[in-house]
Length: 293
Image (cartoon, rainbow, N blue to C red; front, side, top):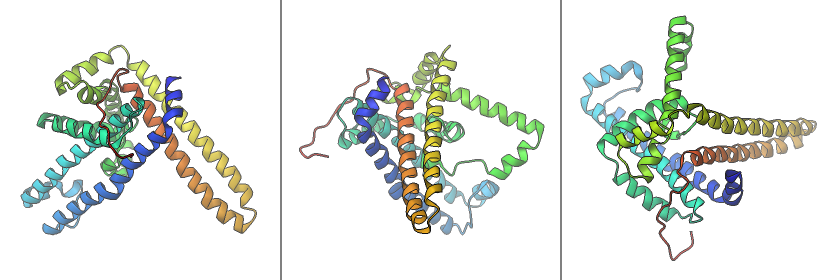
């Protein structure tokens, strides 16, 4: 009930927050990483980068490998920054103090507190847990970190490998729940990684199924709402398809409405998940500006 009231009051700010972060990544950050990777591969005359040539890359092109590792470290810091931006934004919106200046200043302060151990931890967290769980967080920066589909298809045809993959996914899912509070604890309680891990493990002790059910409920509501929207627009399109002109115009409008609706549903689900893991009493410093945002 509290989430419904909060989202209805601040949905515009939530929409702006997620839209700005998403566009910033797609328009500015991701092209820079793509350009960096292309430059390194061209310098080493490497035609492509994949799992198949990773070993030869390390042995034959050590400097290119170091450049790619540095890129990976910066990528992890950017992913950490993305989630910090969103979490800070959600907290400030909840305080009725939404300001990109405040969000950026708090995020910059939190990034300065990130030590080398934190980078290594989040490398494993973001590269392993996030792509496999996909329920709690998502980032376009990690969209290409996936197991190739043909490898999964091959492994799933073998009973032993299929069993091992199932166990692996189950273990990752359990870890995702048990480490749910690590990032908020580090950002807002200013605790070290070891303390955050221990506290998150303690907070989710004997509450695994409670948090799992809450997360599944949010995911189920988002899925049903999205399917309902698709069904309504599809039914409308069936009627418009009787005339070529109305079919073309209606199809364009329906696709646009579907994209907007799906994005709104995604924002609601993300806010609901983040509200679940944020401390109820957390507050952030605000930075007043003489000009309106």
